[in-house]
Image: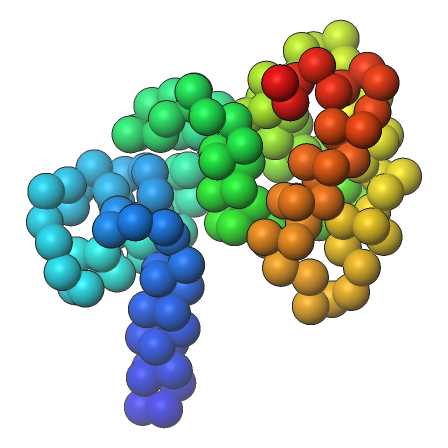
Length: 155
């Protein structure tokens, strides 16, 4: 019973990390669209997290995901996939790192450089095991912004 209560509390707490009154984008958000209150918000966030469909939505601009604001999309993506992104950045490759490049509008010709740059700066992006999605997002943004090749994508 304690595990169930802790799971519900954790789900609730993680769902509150989203800015505004919605639960980001994804199937859960689409299902519970127009409903308000904590219950639908938690269910939408839980559905989005369980189905893992935000990556697809953010890279394709579907499922209610707005791709016109790449920095905000990156922040949401990082928030929902921080462990997977950390793993991919440490390896310098992977589908989550590729999805991050797509979200940021990094052209195919610059993606190898993007991946290598983030891998080289892994310790800056994730200085400890307690690094948050917010600090990692800020670090990625600053690294890209200061890079001669990639800074064009941050304007």
